[in-house]
Amino acid sequence: MIYHSQFEQFREAAGRHSPEWLRVLRRSAMQRFADLGFPTTRDEEWRYTNVSPIAKGAFQLGGGSERNGLSARSLGAYLYSEVPSCNLVFVNGRFSKELSSRCELPAGVEATSLAEALLADPDRTERLLSCSLADCADAFRALNTAFLSDGAFVHVPDRTILDTVIHIVYVSIARDEAVMSHPRNLIVVGRESQARIVETYVGLGDGQYLTNALSEITAGENSTVEHYKLQRESEQAFHIATLETRQSPNSSLVSHAISLGGSLARSNIQVILDGEGAQSTLNGLYVTRGVQHMDHRTLVDHARAHCSSRQNYKGILDDRSSAAFGGKIVVRQDAQKTDARQSNRNLVLSGDALVDTKPQLEIYADDVKCTHGATIGKLDDEALFYLRSRGISRDSARTMLTYAFASEILGSMKIKPIQCQMDLVLLGRLSRDGRLKEVA
Image (tube, rainbow, N blue to C red; front, top):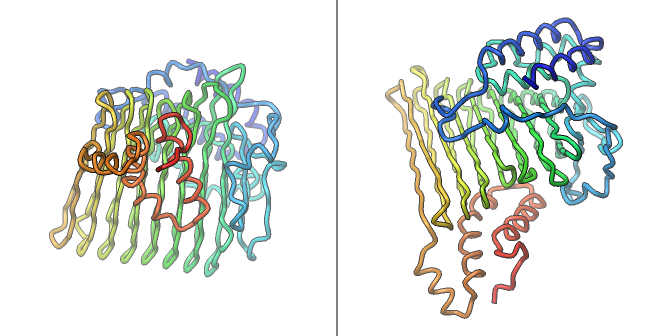
């Protein structure tokens, strides 16, 4: 298997510079991957997503120079100069100092590559990483851990208000061969601190590649974390990503997930509310066209009492594309006074598009407020007729109504330059010819 041969090459090259605990972890994770094998549609969690193209793919670890021919100017469309930001840029999974911008950060704040953190203080990095073999519950996490090498490391110490946005940019470039990368992001926000983290995944060119990312966020007591994930991969790409968060008492986490790219994309979010008074909000928007397939899975685990969670995911499907959503809320026996709500709404623009949705509640406490719901529908014919009767073309009316459906998710973003850029990207996607149209 190509992944095993790639691992042997990687282990030989990386082993000389890695601490012993990491070498052991990688070998164990690769064995775990071999035992598990890639999931199939017979597995309930992967019932609607066939990953055989990834299992059969001949992906090579991204190599070459750290810039790979890129310039800072070519990345301008994906950056946000309007807000103070620290940009950490990775090309084919490798950190690029030349393309990154290190800004002045408050005392004690670290925003660097995981490879640098491992080199500078391997013992501390081992303590912070949640990467025991028992955590490798699925093949893709095991594969990510086996190839654990680089990614972003962000540490915000206690009682620190971080006004600067930490922007992590992953750029994949596949030219002569299909490449793969396995980014690992480690984000630790201390007690009574605030941070805004943005992850952007983009692909340049038309080549095929695989991104298999894993992000871990630890939110300390009374902390506030706002996290954005903007998935804008090439439509020939495969994208698998997991976000795992653990929240301490009275912490607040808000997640915004926008998924636009990829031939096959799977996003997993796992939230553990591990302290009383913790709050989480998950907002998501996925937009598919052509033959794209996107699968989103959320798990919100209410492990302590007096916690609240909100999930609001929306999907827009066109052409012969497909999507799946699976959302689960778990309320533990001692998690009394839980307040949890979940919603998944889908707008189908084509008779050939397909969506499957499965909201779930798993409740072991008796004093809780939990609701969930899911809808699948099409554009309102009466609303279309109303706009057409005012002289608006059918395509423009269709774009206006579809954008209105998505605007709730985009409008929840507090970083306005990101919201404005996503507005323009979405409007371009919704226009039939890919360009913005006059609405008049």
